[in-house]
Length: 219
Image (cartoon, rainbow, N blue to C red; front, top):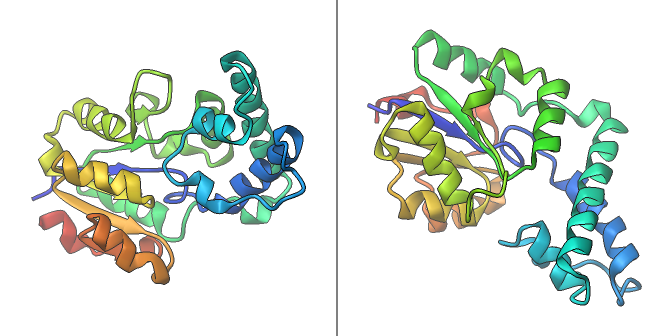
């Protein structure tokens, strides 16, 4: 039986890829020498903010890239606030949280978001009613990759990673979960990408949390 659940946030509990793309498009126009060309979505595969900014504008210093990263995230939050009708938790998420609480199954967040975004999410989605802040692992510079964040979430939950369900939307994060021996890996996203998520290591795929099978908790 699985003893804990580790949730990703962006693209998992909140479908926000379009907001990130809009913010990155604005940044691309500002810093790229090829701003007249369309931003290639493939750039976003497996790169963090610093790496992506370096790819777009290789002449920027580390300090300059950090400033650009902060501006990008501020743009992203502003875009979210301008689209309140699209800013909500993924369908079925709150019902699943209630089910986990009723079953006394602990759960945590492992997100690559920075603290400013995490604070924004707690305020906007009232996450405090579902998550304890100490059960939120985020990008504070202490982790080399998302896999380390997942393992830290399991440590805080006091549960072996092999007894955790990990729910992720990105191929890279699913691969980390597989390599580190997660008990159950669930990929989330639109139906067309499910085969790709399965190839990366997902054992099950869902389009939203209304499709979450509670039997997976007994795996």
